[in-house]
Image (cartoon, rainbow over all chains, first blue to last red; front, top):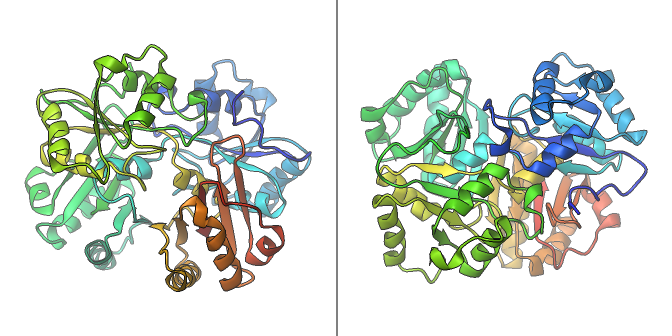
Length: 243
Length: 243
């Protein structure tokens, strides 16, 4: 028997956190079989974007009955009433799946609000295994995975960004915590420019782009070597790490 | 075609980071099908523990030819020569798999040394998707996954541990970074005692035990509520989070 099935201890539903792809086509590469089966057995969903969630479910199961399923969106436009409706489903005993646009819900993605509400209402929460560009980049960087910090997105203002990058370099060197951060793809080349101009020659920098996709690139080099070997990151989702 | 296969760009081998289970029995729950197939196609391995790695490979494929495979151990007793031998395999064009005792290699587990050497020798590194108790706990905690720090294991000394826990609480409150940490199972009850005695009543604490196993427990409550609802953690691998 799958161990994923038996967590529900009450007559309430269970909240499942369902991984999405990072943009790649093959589910088999990145999502375990049981997770796919459990996800497509659900009919109630709280999702970052309905279209993207439907695409995932159809990719997991071509026969997935979208018309028999209910979707609530969680994003900047969502109202508290919508989140309350998802909570109501759970209280009524319905199992609910949370799906973000890419990768693992709740990590650099929405989802934490409904999870937090679930805990407050003693509803079981079950996170499923799937691809996280942050975790995969950390594994593949060769930097310490014993201690690390993920900072989310960089400040937009250039001066502030440079200051922030320098503080990450300082903390990585002084405290040994691997520093992980990202930005929106169209600002990646600005970030790279700032990294290569502002950090010390021998600072180790990892850039992981298009993780799990066919054009995945994952390289760790000194800043000095990056200056001679930089490549175009402007359209690729990237994770940056300082070791 | 699977996107996991086409990363190797040179006549050198590729270094694959292969997830292990977290102690559960069902591979299908936690490891994608392609990852299983790729892992069991390898014959050269660098592993935390040979017995545990062989068990995983046989679980992935009952027919896996253990006697035709080579294993080098990476742990406190490993010599630099052994790591150099794994690097030599890669340089000679052999694909090598890295397997730790549980979960994702290189994250709160060994593996970073060979990955770092691989990068220095321009060898492709491919991290595979699998279970990470740290990431799954963070997803399921309901705390911020936009900013977080993993601190690894707590100090053994009680006074130092209390001081450390209070500093985590302070940073979580002031900076909004979710604080993640662990300890060896036989010290978990001491950690719990210190958390419940020393943290503020309303501080939110998540404890995730036996993640992905049949007896998984994942709860977020205030410290005050934990005092009334604590349970035995002494034999369970646990992740602690302060939100």
